[in-house]
Structures are given as structure tokens and as C-alpha cells.
Amino acid sequence: MFDDIGGKFNCRLREQVSVNRSTADGRGIITFKLVKLEAEYDPEVAKRLTVGRLLALQNVKTKDGYYSVYELADRNLMHYSMLTLDLSQPAAVRREFMDLIEKDWEGGSKSTWIEIVAAPTGYLMKLEDEPKYVKGEEPLLVGSAAQLLDDEALRSFFCYSGSDSALGDLMIEGQKPIPLTVNMENLVHYHAGVFGYTGAGKSNLMAMMIRKALETMPDLKVVIVDVSSEYAMSLLDVLYEDGRVIIANRLRGSDPKEQSFDFMHRHVMPASLTSLNDLVRQAVYRLIVDERVKEIELPNPDVESAMRMTTYGGLLEVLGDMSNDKYTPAQQKVVLPVLINMIRARAEERKVELGFDGEAEDIEIYGDKKLANEFEAELDKAQIRESSALRAMAASLKSVIDVIRTKRAGYTLERSLTEITSPGSPRLFVFDIADTRRARWLSSYLVDSLMKKRRSEYNDNPKILLVFDEAQEFIPYETKREDYTDMSTQAVETLLRHGRKYYLSGWIAAQRIARLNTNVLQQLHSYFVGTMPRPYDRQVISDTFAIDDVFLDRTLNFNNGDWFMASFKATNTQNVPVFFHAQNNEEILVRRIEDIAKSM
Image (cartoon, rainbow, N blue to C red; front, side, top):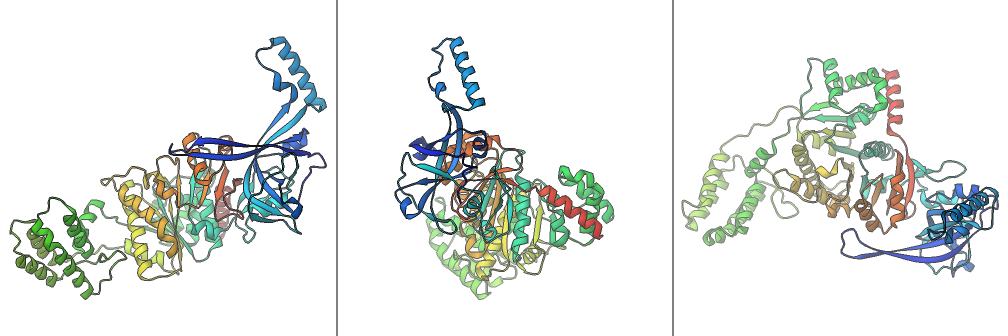
């Protein structure tokens, strides 16, 4: 339970301090509580005291077996003579002092010590046969001895015990690596976000977590809206086994072999796969031959918006907008409620279910001549002028009803939705859409359609996870109607606010947090943070989880694959900073591609 590092770890609590700063938005003040401890200097002790280590501190309930658990945030090597050494002293004197200090480090001295800064985890440890952690906080005993928790105690504190879904190893100096296992179902169900600067490895981490989620949850389906053309290659082995790639632009080539070349040219190839070019091409070739790559004709968003006016829901929207328009004449506003009720009644006659907000679903009005006649009759009864907007709408309604809309041939969005919501169809769907405007429209369409289907036919099988990489394209802080960011932002926000009730979940990844919709960020229960150079971005996460800035600042020294994690649901303890080195998705991918090549 405790690790005294061979009797070398002797540490005591020196003081408690509070640090105040403004919140990232400047609207309030946030306070962080820290403690400072002193440990005897020893090279082995200094090496083992890495950020993320846990300390057990004595409190007023320690006699009953309770210790306060604190997490090491920083440590500095100190020498007594350095405290009084400053520029007011001659340079020769300073150099002489520093020579003496250097000898003390080499030979050992009572004038040296290790200053440790630690932050509260919000947990108490109960000493039993195995350590038991409970939420709570008790007054600390200043001057009392502190203990260092051993590797097994670290495992039981951070790692979810009921899972073998390891995302990587804890970045803690120990006797052997400690795998970070998480509750994958909670990580999916309660939404997550991955944030890091360019080159931090966001897509690598996201792809690895997606494959782990699919392995752990057999009833899960994953839908990726990919605007950067990365995931078809990063998850090629999963797609080969049970996936679907949906592309908006037809592959060039007269046969699958030529099309496989074009497919590879369109997608980002992970660096580790370049030496396996021929094997990758064979796998892509099989994807195309097995019809796992589907070409889809995405509608033009502007045209599709106009076509919505041919549905009952679209008509209700138009009349609702007219009711709210201050320029609509009072005479027409009086008749609008009558027309709205008439359309709703007509929709019910045709067995069109009403949505949760009282609006009719998007069922087309073609052939409904009774609707056109009743609409015009109501206008006659109200003596609406022939030159009015409502009369023009009635005339358009008559002409639209007589038109038969041709259905799209081939693979359609409706077909993809059927596959996504059916338990027996492919489990991984990658929508490879390079046009960001269409990708935003598609994200809105997918979320709205899935929410409507689950509301009308409640079902928890399959569970569906939607992934939005390059989230700044879908949920920016400032939205516009003309580029469809208003549609995508509203859709993703709805998904994260209400999707859990219908087993619809969301993961997002982005370079920065500052420019994202804050309402969306507040719905994420798990954050993964890589290197983020801008202080504001780190402060937003610090404010969200009430985690001291010193932990987030450590991310500036991260190597590729190093991540900071904070979660309310996925780890064994809530809202405690975790530093880990993630498994490399590319290494897993290379092994799987080689196995696929052997089986061909």
C-alpha cells in the first residue's frame, strides 16, 4: 500500500496554500488549494517522484484509518544556501556558494531537500485489507508525516477494475508499467473530447479508442464524419472486417484495381504504412470488391433546404416564420393558426406522426390535393387578398402537389440510416466528405434522423456513437446560416444534451477549445488533452474540472502519445488528473494489416 523507496522516503507536510486567478472568461474568480511538503533528498527518491504520483496525508480522522489522498503536481530540489543567494551579493561570492552547493548535491547534505507541491484529489483512503477510496475532505495535520502510495494503490485508484480496455500506460516511474484501464461503456455513453495542437496525435488516439470501443461493446456502432480523409486508412482493418466507407465523389477507374489506386490517393496514409503499400492496396481492393465502399450522391444543401418546403414539417416552418415576422399583415396573422391546425390535422389523417416538438415529420405532400383545396378554402373564407403571400403560397402548393418526385438511385442516405440502426449491418461507418459545407449538412441530417427514429421507436440496440473530428468545422463559437454551421452546431448540441437517453453518443476532436461552442463542451464528461500552447485553452479545461493549472502546464512537455485525461465517469475515481502514454494505433494497424495479408 505504501512505498518508502527502500526506507529513503521521509516526507512531512509543511504548509497549505491557496492560489486565486480569474476564470478563462474573466467573469469570476477560481481558487485552487495546494499543499507543500518537504522530503529528504535522495537521487532515487527524486527520480520516483513524478507528476501523477499519489501521497497519503494525515488528517483529523487518521486515527480511524483515514488518509487524505493528494496528487503530486510538481517537485523542486532545494538547498538552504540558495534561499539567501541573490544579485545583491558579489558574483565571486555567489560562485563560491554555488560550488559548495554542487558538492553538497554530490556528497549528500542535510542542507538539501525536495520540495513537493501536491493538489487534493477529493478522496479519502480507508486502510483495510485493500485500500478503499471514498469521496471526502478532512482538515490536514501540518507537520505530520506523509506516505507515498505504491504501484498497486495507484492502479486501484486510477484504473477501472471491471475492464480490460487499456488505453495505454500511466506516465509514472514505477517498478513496472501500469495499464490505464477505463470504463469504456461510460466513456462512450457520457461523451468525450480530444484536444491538442497540430501534430499531437488526436486522430491516432481517437482511432485507437474507436477500435477499443468496438472490441469492448458488441452492440455498438460508430459513425465518423471525416472531413480530413484520415479514418478510412487509420481503421482500415476494422473496415475490412465489418465496416463501410461512404464517399461523395465517384472513384476513378474502370475496375476495382484502378479504383483502389484512386482510393489510396484520396486518403491520408499513416507514415508507418508506407512500407506496406502493396498490402494496404490489397486490403483496399478487397473493400471495393466486397462492396464495402459505397458512392453516395449527397444533395446540395441549398436545394435540399428548398425541397423541405414540399413536406408537412416544411409548411409548418414557413407559416411559423410568417407568424413571427413583424411585416406580415395582421389579417394574414389571424388566419395562420387556422392553417397550421389544418395542416396538422391533414398530417394525422395521412398517419404522419408528430415530432416531440409538435411539428409533423418530413413526409412529402405530393398527391395530397385535399390539402391544397382546404388551404385555398380557408383563404377564401378569411377574404385574403389575391396579391398576398399566402395566396402565392396556395398557388405554389397546387403545382407542387401534382409533381412526382423521382427517387435517387443507388446507395442513399436513407439506406445508410437503415444500416446504422439495424443490429445486423456493418458496425463502423466512415463518411468521407471533404466539402465542409456538405459535411455540416450531413452531420445535421444524421443527428436529426437518428433522434427522430429513436424517439418514435425507442431502442437501445444498437448503441450508436457519432465522431466529429476537426470539431471546429462543426461546432464553432460563432455560427452562420449560409455555411450551415448553425445547423451542425445545433445538431451536435442536441446530440450531446439529449442523446444519452436514446443511447446516442458523441466524441469530438479539435485543435483548440477557445473557438468552440461552450454549450457543447459542457456536455463532455471526459477530456483528453495533448500539447496546447495557448494558456486560454488550458485554462478552460482547468476551470471546467477545477484542476490546478500546474497539471495542465505539464502538457507543454509532452512527447507524441502523451496525454492528460480527466473524467467524471470513465476512470475509477472522478475528476482526478491522469497522465498516460497511449497505445499507438498505427502499431496495431500494421499488425492487423499483416494478418489480413496472410489470410488472403
